[in-house]
Image (cartoon, rainbow, N blue to C red):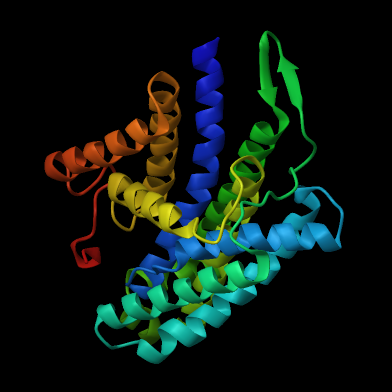
Length: 290
């Protein structure tokens, strides 16, 4: 029973991590460079949910559409400021510009909200629900449901719609996509908007149970980077699977030992994976190495 409870908690945490990693890898594939502000964008989503809850007393599920729209707009702004002016230049230029964006977001959140931890409202309501002999958190079940819906929606768009096919073509080969008449710049902007919207959703999901602080983004970008490395650099399914494995590992080791030990063991495991299978579980395109 305890094992089942830990697994459910790990899956709920992993579902939120999966949204973080999914947004990260979408932008990575489209832009061909790492967005180091992504973790801080997750933090911004959590802070936005906190601010909206003060204006609109409503459960997190009602605030989610607003968070998605506003964070998508923020993603467009980040792409215009930190990526488009530097396109065609060495990737280190984008690395530095996105790090600068992350610092701006951190300091802006600190100035507006202060440094103390804050909590967003629950997606539905607080408390627990009994599933037979198992008592689980309503928030955990809601996180699983919302994350599954968002990830499923992304997969449907990419697999079944013309927009999705254009986004995939742009990520796979921008020059060929441009030659076929696809507006590559517009597709990259759309991907930034989508990836940042998913980052905002993850921030809302995480900010209730785990709180949010202006400096939370650093840990989250590392989790996304590890998830992408485990799953396979540039692989969308790999990023989701990697995120779930990270969360299950964290929850399991933390329950037996402690969170600092779990974190240290996670990085040690990452080193082993890099040595034993550097291409990740789902392989890695050589051109994505950076």
